[in-house]
Image 1 (cartoon, helix red, strand yellow):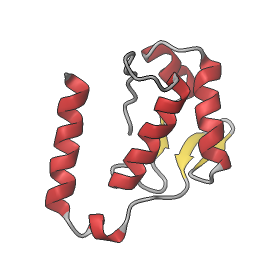
Image 2 (cartoon, rainbow, N blue to C red):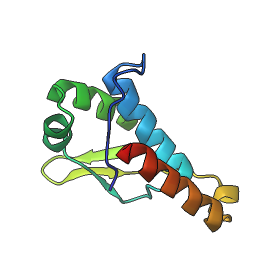
Image 3 (cartoon, helix red, strand yellow):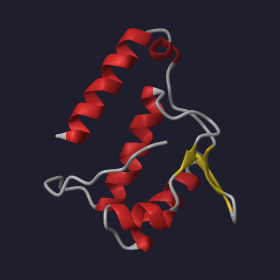
Image 4 (tube, helix red, strand yellow):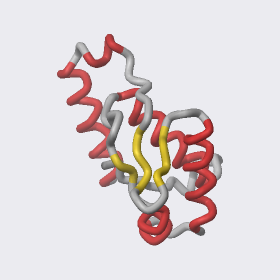
Length: 106
């Protein structure tokens, strides 16, 4: 599951940062078709954000066909952006995942 974070120094709005993080995770292959995203309430409480901000990000991703919201069930990845070449390089994917984890903790 993706763990969202906000960079207050980033000029992009919070909803744009959430959208970008999902897209990047899809490109890197760290999110896969069928993976569940955190609920709007979970994201809003953790960051903290207005739930409408999270809804706006999820709505944009849904309009792009990247996620699918199932009322009462959750929000799931519907499409991947990972390129086959990246999938063929597990060592690079592992290094990128480690780098992202270090960046988040910093």
